[in-house]
Image 1 (tube, one colour):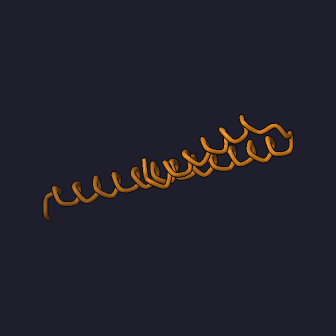
Image 2 (image 1 turned 120 degrees about the horizontal axis):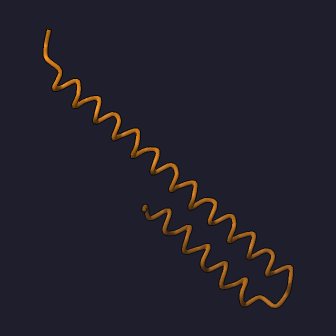
Length: 72
C-alpha cells in the first residue's frame, strides 16, 4: 500500500494505544473515535488505490488490444 495508507494505520495504532492508556472515559471515547476516523481514511485510500489499479489495467488491456488489432 501507499505511504499515506501506512501513515493512517500508524496514527490509528497510536490512537488505540492512547485509548488503552486513558483513564478518563471521555478521553478514551475521543481516542476511539480517532481510531475509527484514521481506519476509515486508510480504507478509503485502499479502495481508491485498488480502483485506480483496475482502471489502469483496463486502459492497458484496451491499448494492447488496439495495438494488436489488424489494420484494415
